[in-house]
Length: 131
Image 1: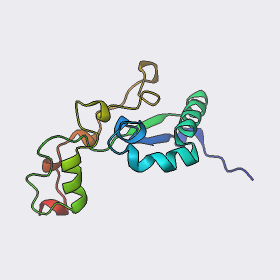
Image 2: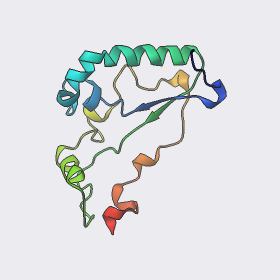
Image 3: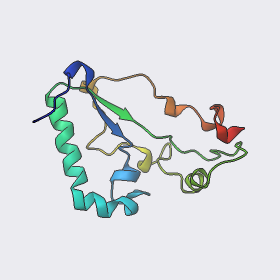
Image 4: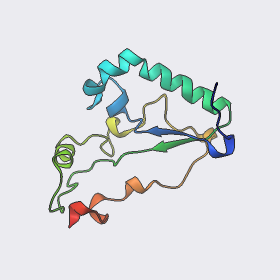
């Protein structure tokens, strides 16, 4: 039996479709390339995105934080992951790696949404890492 979902309550969430993650030459691509090739990641993402768009179901981009120099500098207790991210600067604002993969970039005909919360600088957020 095939499970279906109500169209008015359904959307596709594309999480981090950045060049750094999905493109050869991206900072994180070497870590993803093997699995991506094995499962046909890019072809499957292209197919599902096209099918969802054809069905008139919304697609939402869910971007990760856009790295900038000084990220986490004011945090007293950054995690090892945050320290590593600050050094590597994945998805860095203003770089090719921090731009959407061209196959999944928003297009004007798709409309737009409000500015994502991820554009708020990390030092302006309240979290356990800042206390």
